[in-house]
Image 1 (cartoon, rainbow, N blue to C red):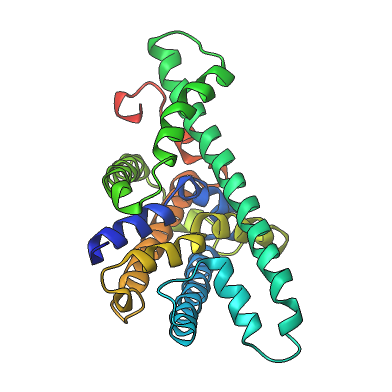
Image 2 (image 1 turned 135 degrees about the vertical axis):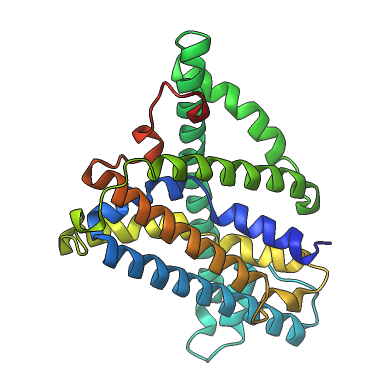
Length: 276
């Protein structure tokens, strides 16, 4: 059973991933003004969707007298209990949700695996000689598979805490380099090319997407009603993520402009120890 803070840590860790490192280049495509607005509005709609999902799951659990419901079961039951025209689509929606969740999780896992292996290789190449990237992915997969085998989220809390501390430390290092030789804001554009906005929103949606965590976290809470309160886990966590993402994308774009790389770590000096 999770406490308020356990759940908040899990939500923060699930929301803040490698996508944050792509926000400076996303801002370079939208401009800083549109970038700030885009991150805030995207986070708002993501949070609102998660809120509707969580509240609907609680209501459906009460109606059917069951303790919890999964993401796909909630969608299935909502269609089953919905208007007459929606009832025949309940089973189809169940399979569609399963398919989309599978594709989403496989895609995220591939991105994270590649990111971890490439960054680990960049460090080991300096100290241990050059490694084959495929071999590095294999070595990185072993501890990840072990941690992924833990099904009880309560036992994952220490790993989430460690991950959150690592993410915050990494962001702090990047923030440090962002403030070195920071150019004036007037040197950057406020609004980018309209044709680049889809790429911007795609990057932001990837960075902020963690809706698959909402119900598992709410179901594991000691007081599930604390999840959707005005100062509950969802709102507090989303506000913290929105603030971090806005600052990261904005400052990264002001610092590196159009030279921002797909992962901002590539803009950092490779010969500095703290970067490693």
